[in-house]
Image 1 (tube, helix red, strand yellow):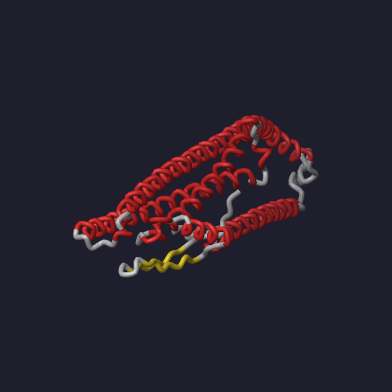
Image 2 (cartoon, one colour):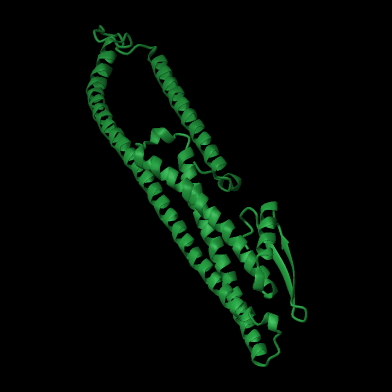
Length: 307
């Protein structure tokens, strides 16, 4: 019924009314399950000739399988809950994301198991309808005195089988509630973890913001000092240059004939500085674009892993 779980089973059964015989094949049985089936058939008693004997045994085996899966999952959940309750959690203790991955796996397995149980319940509803139909047919045959004496108890057997199937469905409802409990509690634990991480990141961002504000204040101070210093240093540099003869006699030039060399060097160095800045920033931009293209590729987006 639940093919995604281990030890999946399948049943093919045929009932021959004239001989009151059941011919059934159970697929996927291991040795333990085969022993259980043989033991149930030997102890069947009056139920041995019931048309739905093998589907009833099949339902019992499926119930054992699902209940064990739920109880195993509950044990894992309880152990992790105890660790969360008795130990202090911190992001540093889960740097590799192993604990987070375990909780996500537990949450997904609970959801998957809950879907399996609901699927099995739908099949049991069909089995209940089949039991009702068989009981009606047996009742009609008994009323017409067409039912052999040794098969007269099959009606009561069908009623017992129906009650047992209903009990199994009630137990499945309890297991669904357990899976829901694990799912909700695990989701709550994960939400608490993410909130803790977000709170830690918020504190870090506040520290970064304060440091940035201090650096911004220092930069404004440096800029203010630069605005005062550069004009004064430029004027001082001009007056201290040999390019200008401020005490030139009559007929002498105040400006040196080599002033053009100063202009060429100043313009050339300015151009080289601007070119170096342009190439450096452009290279960083190209590397950033290549990195974005790499991480935005479909094959990268479709192969993300939990951490």
